[in-house]
Image (cartoon, rainbow, N blue to C red; front, side, top):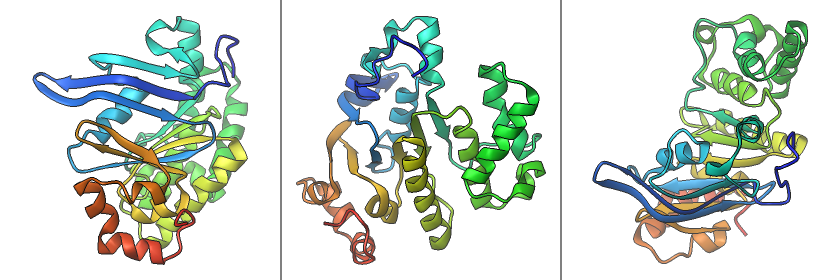
Length: 266
């Protein structure tokens, strides 16, 4: 970790007693959640359950009305500016669709975090950006392309390259395989697994993709009734006694994903 005050032995991300609301509308209440070092956690829940709100809360894009968020053992509300910057640099985010800047090339998009948070030379920035392009499986010539020149899958990979620009330890993925065909989605899952090992990443992934849950997630966190009802292995979660859970994991699409041989099926 770049700051001596950060406890790298503590859970990289933890939320306790979270309350979030918009006016009188309570989204989360007394929500507890923890992500352990090195794991891939899939966050699931019904439409309107507040998955994106929780993701934004964990990222610091929305402050909760109550409760505590901790990064690497540190209470976010008590961080001094230097430590907050150091922790922010340890987090990378892939938003839905990639969220690339349309007026910038792929290489320029990846260089944005470097320009904002480092003082390295432009030449080194370009070299590092091209390295990230290679890491996410994009061809070298994509560096000079604009987002409008890219397919949906390439946009996601370019967005992922930007999320990895500062070599973060925490990676947040918001519906990373949405809109991809099955072959592209499977390739993206394999990419995340490979990057987790290569970069020692901890991953929180909001997803509806049952194949991804079966294939790459170590634990699945279920957001229902304004809280995380359970966060455990697929085998344990799929047996949880809640109507939404039983419908989600017991339906025909889930059975098809299971029969396809997901690695977490046993």
